[in-house]
Length: 160
Image (cartoon, rainbow, N blue to C red; front, side):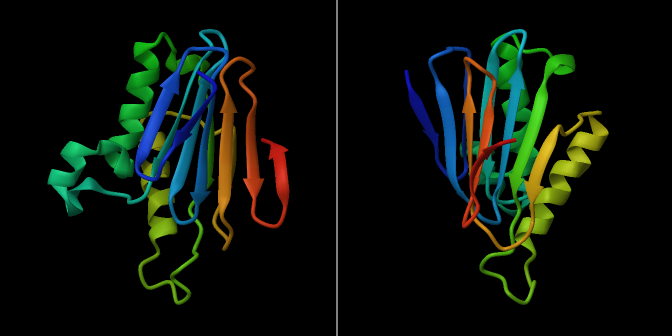
């Protein structure tokens, strides 16, 4: 009840109007917030790596760590609480290039690309996004209102 903090490589879903989900420090990681305004069900995923094939054992223990396993888990978990795909409002933040100045690993970009690939394949539309650049972000989702807020380093917090 109240504030539910989602750590790196984790996710949470809720259907309780008093809950607010929040995830901090989205650098190269991606935060995916989904919300069904009819069912008043929402969730946030904070995944750190694009593909589970780099560590299948870790992916079995913690599917939310990877985009290709975490994204389907987020959607299925919200469906289990009564959300419907056609009602979902999807917002995405993160994918920055923070610790990789020369773009050698491009984790942020690769994290975003796996998301776009999965969404395209499953006909999921993004309502709002704030990705790339070199900033940290925080995403907050109020289950009771469906309002989603984004805080960007150096820019403050705003609804998105």
